[in-house]
Every structure is written in structure tokens, then in C-alpha cells.
Image 1 (cartoon, rainbow, N blue to C red):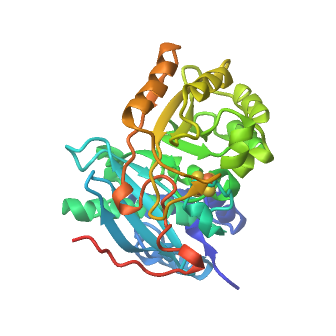
Image 2 (cartoon, rainbow, N blue to C red):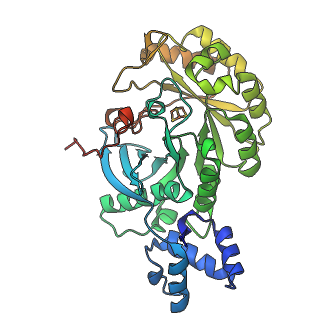
Image 3 (cartoon, rainbow, N blue to C red):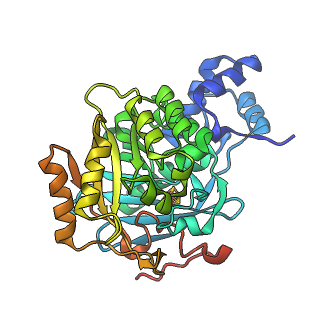
Length: 380
Ligand code: SF4
């Protein structure tokens, strides 16, 4: 009989299983603390459990590290891309983004929920490799624990995951890496339950944002389950005609359906949905587009992240136009127009573009043409 992956179970699931096998549920709490507070890698190390329980757990559950770190690349802007492989050799990438260039601590971690992606956004390098598979909850959570281990090594301290609770090395988690989080609904939601568990890593829902391209039924389901987790929607176009061309998902769930789902989203008081709008020169960055965007967000509680496009290593063309970021003054004009109409606009800097870690660049080099190669770090 194959063993269950204990790292893909929530504490409630573990408690249920323990109950079914005649064990006290508090034993599951103890195991959970060993896994996520102490970061042990064997049942034998769980020293407050009876010896026979440790060995019976090892018979039933596997506790293998879900990911192995293959390479890291440091950007000149301080962000770090961590490239992992799953057991079956698929690439998974995360990016650590500093809150400021002054400190190596206080980082935002951008995690992946799938290896590759099925959504086919035309501006995205990850889309061109297609979906390899959805990640397990353990593979999603491991991106956080392995990143904490990496930070501890960099800081020259002994790895103790619980330090994150007191010192908050990773202050924010964003599910915006490879893949569409709501297309891997079970993996994403189970990982969130594990990450937010107070017996584990104890991330506050306020510090987590999950991004979607607009899978309307899943947005509704997600809102019912996790109304306090931040929701970001990657919009990028204010009309169906344009969005159909940039993001195929719009042909299934158009802007009217998306807006309805966002209007009905059970947002807690004072919280807003983030609208991500990547600017492409000559495609979606004119004043006409700004006016259309303003019109579309009417009646929604949102803030807008305006992000200049990060060109991929290979140029991408849409309708014969090569994708490029707008000039800084055009970007300002676009953002200012929205601000003048009382919209909260954040002009997000793009991190990691020199290391293939910016939005839509993840694993692009590694998986081109369906080939998977281990990348050795070319940087000094
Ligand atoms: S932008 Fe996101 S959802 Fe769209 S193809 Fe790329 S990874 Fe997938």
C-alpha cells in the first residue's frame, strides 16, 4: 500500500485520520507542530511522541521533502528566484521580493501553484509551456518552508521555521507565480489551510493574496471559503474585444460575468480587491483604455496595480505588435488619470526582470519547447 503524504494534509484531516485509527486528536496537533514549527524531516525526531507511535506513523505516512532546490538567482534589485524540482522532475519557481533594498528581511514571497499553466495568456512566457501538472498542497507549502530555510542560510542562522512567526522574515505571501491558483483549487485551498494554521506557520489571512485571471465560478467558491484572504484579479484589458485577444479565459467568462462576481464577492469591511493591469505599449495603455477601465470598475471596491510589462527574453507579438512596456511618462499619464478620478492606484515596480523572475517569465527558459533542463546559475 502506498503511503499518504502527510505534508499534504491539513491538521483537521490529520486529526480525523488519527481518530479513525483510535489515536487521540491532540497527537495530530503535536505532529503538526513538529512538521511546521520545528521543521523536522523524520518521525523519529518527534520526541514527545511514544516510540511505537513514531514507527507506526512512518509505516503509514511519507515525510519526504516535496521539492529540491535546484538553483537560486539573485537580481540586482535584491529579489531572488528559487528554482525547485518536484520528485518527478518538474520545475517549480518562487520569488523572494524585498520590502525595501535596505533589509534582507521583511520579504514578500511569490509562490507557484502549478508547473506551467493552462490559461494561455498571450503575453505570458509560462503559458507557452502549457500545463505540466497542478502542484500538491505539500509542494506549494514547501516553497515557503524551503524559502525560509534559504533565508536562514543566507543570514547564517540555524534553520528554525518558528523564527518566521516572531521575526517575520516572510511578511507577505502572494500566489502569483506559475499557474492559475484557482485552476488548482484543492491544492491552493489546502495549502492555505496549512499555512494559516496557528499550530503551523500561522500566516495571517491579511498577509496572503491569491491572484486569478477570472475563473468566475471558482472566485465565488473561494470567496465563500476564504473571504479574508486577499483577492487579486489579473485584468489587463477593459473591453471584451481586447481581453479576448490577450486572455483566452475571457471567452469563457467575459467582463460582465467577472464584474458581477466581483460585485458579489463577500469582502470584509475596509478591504478591497486588487485589479492587476499590466501596461503594453500601444495595446492597452491609451487614455481611451484608462477611461474604459474607470468605467468598468464603477461600483466595485477595488484598488489598481499598474505594472509596466516585462519583456520576455524572446519577443512576443500580439496582432503583429511586439509587446513592450510603455514609456514612463505614458504610464504616469495612465495612472494619474485614474487617480484624478479617486481611484487608488499603486504603480508596482517589476522585480527580477534580469533573472527571469518577473510576472510571466517564470520557468520560461527552463521549459522552452517542452524540454526540461536543470539550469545552472550563470550569475557570479
Ligand atoms: S499570466 Fe498567469 S494565468 Fe496567465 S498564462 Fe501566465 S501563469 Fe497562467
